[in-house]
Length: 334
Image (cartoon, rainbow, N blue to C red; front, side, top):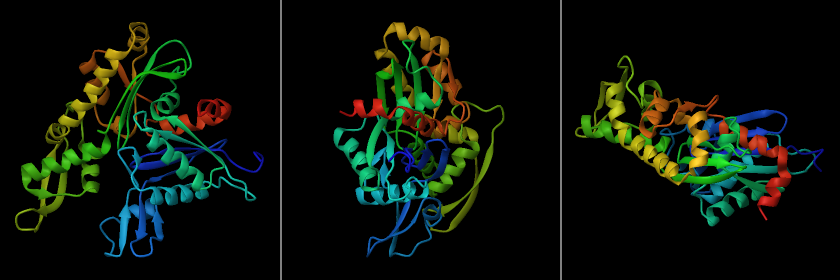
């Protein structure tokens, strides 16, 4: 059967889904968004095409994200999305079905874990396995996960941030918080409304974060023009915001991230911390691209930190690496 099917690894993220095919690498990178007909429940579009419909659809069409804060919020829509991505990946040939490894938050409940496994099975997988997100992120970042020496990863995704100290292929200490990229966007939206009495959408907030967002002061203050709707008269309003203002908006969620790191460090055995202090904390996920994030982490927790190579891809690369040892995943799932 293995001759006719491709094993695939899926980074099933709140914001984006990445699909890794064994022997091919990452073949899909699209938003975790689905457009459905409200009346018939028929899927109209998935991924990039569905995201382009945000804010542009009639009342009969809903554009939804089936995952919230790292877990499945709408099982039926999540299953349809997975079926689409598995099919797009060309993961089955001649009627055979692939084995699928999907990442899961370290803080997910047993019910949430089963929901992800079952969604993959019902979407077409012949076997469904899970790998905890911080382990996948650490593997993808090239950390020595399977050695006795300790390593630490901070993965800041769309819905959750995962912190973990790792050794011997497992998690020694960890913390999962539902404060990540989405929370950063929400903080920017709230700040603009509070300071300017203007409503902006999530996509605008994401653009602001990507353009001038910062976790640590920039040498020069960047500027970004915003178009929004005045909450008083409902009219369009254009104005400019600066990096220092957005840094202020992001302070609270970033502080929560630092607190999660400190809590994990407190639970990490001293022997492992010695090696972590030499190697540094690897930062992965979309918000690893936030300017100055490594300097903020290092100055706040007293340990060196660095942004991993290809931080957006680390979890997907880790699930892909796990495909090389399906036997170990099968044993762990028993």
